[in-house]
Length: 396
Image 1 (cartoon, rainbow, N blue to C red):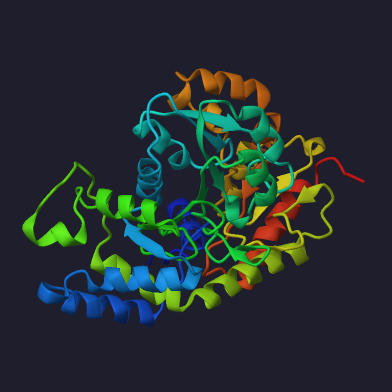
Image 2 (spheres, rainbow, N blue to C red):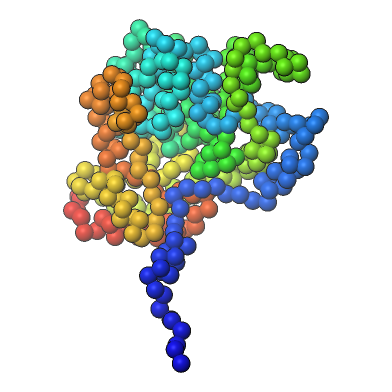
């Protein structure tokens, strides 16, 4: 008689590792989201079509304290609409920080303008006011700030340098963040948000664009629905060609439930960061997300920056974590390093000038920050990091 196997084979061990894999990002979904979506699926038709979208926009504007909010398919479309509303086009330059997702800069090219890449601050990892000052020219028509990983740049200095140049705040990663009592997304002329599945507040995919300026609100409202206004809607009158940038009712219903739980979601992000902060406090030469007076950092992604003396590149760190079934992400690579922008002369200049963004990206990773993380999982991640760093050079 052949005895059954008691030791897992290679494939079984691999499957077990994948099952126990710690995710780098992901949402926290409850019965409330399921109920809201089910209600929208049953009711948001005919005379109630789009009702959840309108409610989500109103509730989101109320949360931020803004006059206007428009729900859109994603943050990229929110940024695109913001730039169109500001009238940006060929011949204009738009300054963006080096360290951000490509979606921050891509819409600059959609409107025919030229992206200019500014360096980041070594502490905040957000737009450096000093670098911004060196990038401003007579062609600068707008500035995009990015609340990277839930942090916020020094907006007082940014506004001082801008001297009236319109500011678009990309708050995709910073819902609930605050600077000097003001919520992320309300610190510029226009604010944009992402509700991607990895974000603190998610609709699976989606975004929002907000503003207090009535002129910009009117343009955004018209352009996001094929050039129509609500008054034109019934008769299909199109005054100008626009875009199909509307959110679905089911996404909006999910977002409404998430927004109702926003304090709970933000508290969990703070808890996750506190777990990491406590367990990694004794690691020499390691920095986590920046704290400072007046700032409420939402810690969308917990990020570890290693001292150069470790001689451990970001890609190698990710490979080592992967061996332990822990997902990580690289610190966002400088935009000017991307092949997509190779044809822009501004990228060549930026690659020589923006040393901070290049340096930090080379030795930093995002640690698992999913909303469903447990304390035991954070323990495991920190144990892996200690294991990776232990044989390396000791730092005083």
